[in-house]
Length: 410
Image (tube, rainbow, N blue to C red):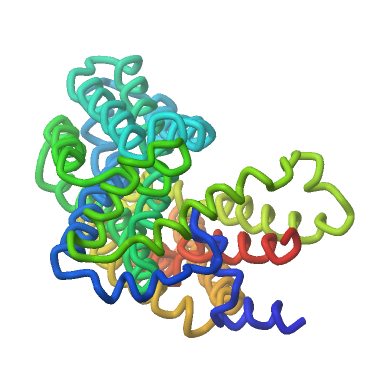
């Protein structure tokens, strides 16, 4: 029961280790090695993180692309609402497939190789969108960008966790989510100023920075150790910790941990349905499923048109307001996650999402029935902003679900 209370209160427990891919629960001698790292090593870790989170920025750019471009694309390509809805949503199908294949891709190509592949898919997708003159090429490009960000969603946090010293690992991992939201906000804001084809070209910029930057940063030492490249492993670890740092103890710890993975039993899908696990599986998976069914993605993908249909002469005002609050609210949510606990924030977020969706739906009900027409647009904006203002469940719900299931399984 004590461990359950720790999770609910957001206290640090041994369960936090589940968030660290290929990282053991005991970093033997790692702290001494980290203290001896010079400023150059920290710069390399920060540079590597900056390069990696360009993929997070790309993720946000892809997600935020459809909202400010809906009216222009439908007008220029003579699309129906149903055709644009396919364009807006097909990115999630690509992302789902990319996420399913991301683990094997990152293990086979390496963390840097997987990021290069993802960037290539995204660039190809953006060029297809830019050159499109019909729905087929437009939707194909959107699907390709979805596949690329699906791989990004896995490999970027894994890469950051594997290269960062333990004492700053949590802070650097938070940058991933912040950059996703930042990319979405930038796409919303730029989309109100430029054409939809120009906005597609701006989506290529983070990918180009990523591809160039990968030439200057090392591969994940833990992945190199896992695939059996001892020389490259030592070189990469030394670059990350500094040329004068003693990395021998950390290297031994990493090798021992990688070797211990070979002795773990192979898990099967059927194991999840054992009676002792089923409660945690239902809670964890249920949180993930219902968080998606809440509809926040639908509002985000079509925010501009939502505001126009609610009664605004232009959706730009609401879109700018929506974009402006995303980053500060994400920062607030990350701060509250460890202060207030995951369970409390889940309850607050679910309540706020319900209130926001109710207000948004109410505004359209009023408009359809000709009631309080002067208030309907304002209620819609407030409803959408309430959904956005409450701490995002997708910032901390996966952590809560993973920790809960990890407690049961391990």
